[in-house]
Length: 146
Image (cartoon, rainbow, N blue to C red; front, side, top):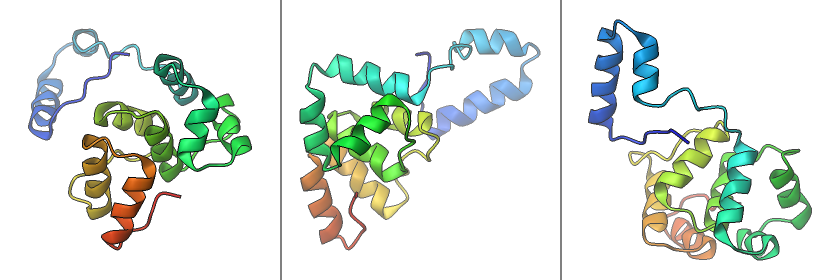
């Protein structure tokens, strides 16, 4: 799990370093970018096992049908961005782990310049559950996670 989560200015520095790099493989090794073969479902199941929670409790807190959630955990369904975020709440993930989960699910990461995403980021940092997050989204006249 060699992902590096960096602020935008640090990202620009990395881009400049990559542009001026004479040796791509040295750059990839320096930042451990060769180990990116982790799939969404493998990462999700790793997070589940690390949580020490029952799958039924996670699914209940996600407000998702049991069969659909099990299809996501088995890899037979690719969840939407909202469903991926619901998984994040169900697993009580932090911001960085949520961003990684979204990326592995091939969705855009949360962006603080987007109103809805900003609200979601706020709820993650304030350790709100899905119900509280949806109440705040509705209060701010944004689409709830469903």
